[in-house]
Image (cartoon, rainbow over all chains, first blue to last red; front, side, top):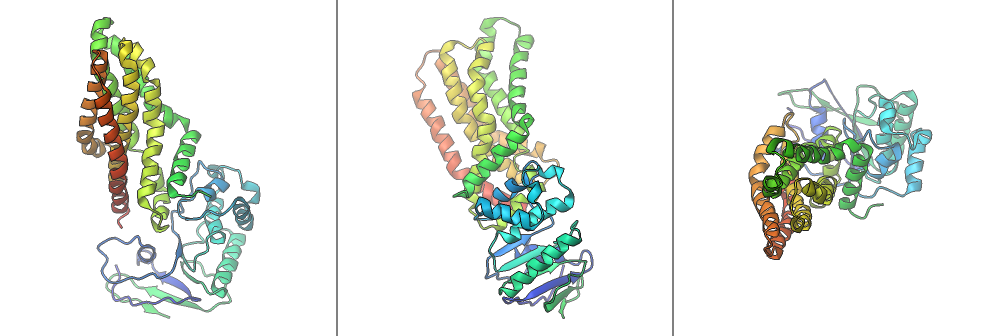
Length: 185
Length: 224
């Protein structure tokens, strides 16, 4: 999918991965998260704890918003009840705490997944298309969240087709599809 | 909140089943219908029915378990929950054990609890009823364990049901023979303690070892 990629991410850095559809953005994200196919060649070392938010967020439609956080399989520690409530309130779902996820809109379901950003204490965030189905207010929440993470010395790698309005210096990794080597800007 | 991923998976699966009770009642319903149809197909002579009852009850339990195995990982695969489990770095062994125990609680255990009633419907002599329940409770644990292995291997396939049956039926046949045999012996008034112990040992062995296979199969299915 891509070749000759030599790439380092240090703490406190914000990276956007850009590329056309099918260029390998999601594959690269999954590879970093440890979900790469075995056919992948090369060396990959991830030295930090990380939080991975993929296309499929692991939200169960038969669970309520709070149950989805409480029973999420992605977190070793799910936080106590107060933290869960706070996280839901931060993403604007305070009133939907006990609402079944199947009654929520796609954007609201996405927000449940985003609430994990406030619960998990990981130095590296891998956000694959975090803005999918999210409205303007939601985008602002994510931007603030990324801002805080990077200022606190954490790193964020994200893919997005929409530009994020951030006061931070963003490095970009361009994936150019089959046979062409990626470049950094 | 949950000490281990085992408890979390178990609570998750049970709560999900509670939200969709039809899925839990389906194997039990299947079991009941088959048992009710038997006298219609075989004729109502008690001697015939009671002779076939141990085998019939066990075969039906096996099929009921097989019926529900395909869906064990389907939902968690589709919505990305398994992916999240894998990247969380939690023990896949404990998580897999959670899936096995949850599946047993939702299929094997209710079947075992209701089996004396079904046994009576097939004129199974009273001496065999207790043994039937105990052998089913232990044996379905093995069936659930194998079912989870098959489900973990085939979850990425769109129509894995057929393959799943092909994969795990050969593994389940010895349990069927043993289980039906135990009930048969009990009906004939022979001692069954040693065979029940073997069945118990098998179920513990399955609980201890299959989570390794299930964990690896989950990884394979997610292409890791």
